[in-house]
Length: 253
Image (cartoon, rainbow, N blue to C red):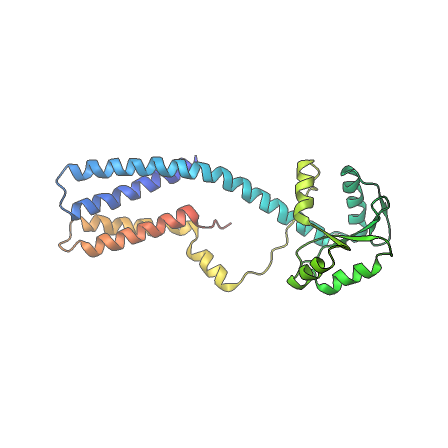
């Protein structure tokens, strides 16, 4: 239903822009109305097709991104011993035979020690070295972690024969495919940069109504005033900005 409403708004705004433009170029009555209606109808169809496809894809992507973020936040605040128990279960489902140790999981057959590093900040090089030192001789180090600092990534590439990295994204995909994602009732909201907030507010979806109103009034005036060019240009710009806010603007709760 939302796609229909957005498409209708797009067609109405397009109709006003085309009508004002044809009127400015002295297209005779009633041809300027007919042409505007035809072009607005085409705009409705094109936008509906585009928006319907992108809406389905975007909704799925937004849902997955939100789930991934919630899952990551869950790992960050969860008790480490409880996480070891959970990941022991996940590894069993993946076909491994893990044994729980004090701060890690042992995969005896693979000669690997699995460490869990989940921080709200990126994983540092010192944290990587710390778990590497805890790994017994003859065993490899596997690290399941949140995002790494660039220096940490470089270190892991240098020591790729000793270290195997597993991202939270990979764990999320595995759990989602096997319907084992834990239920998360909270999310950690990081502080946003002020400029980011300002830009987000400028393209707020709620602002589209204001710009449509101002733009439409100016387009209507362009039909009657002696010098219509200014009203036509400004009305078109306001309506275009309103469409950008409608199509790509962020919702606020």
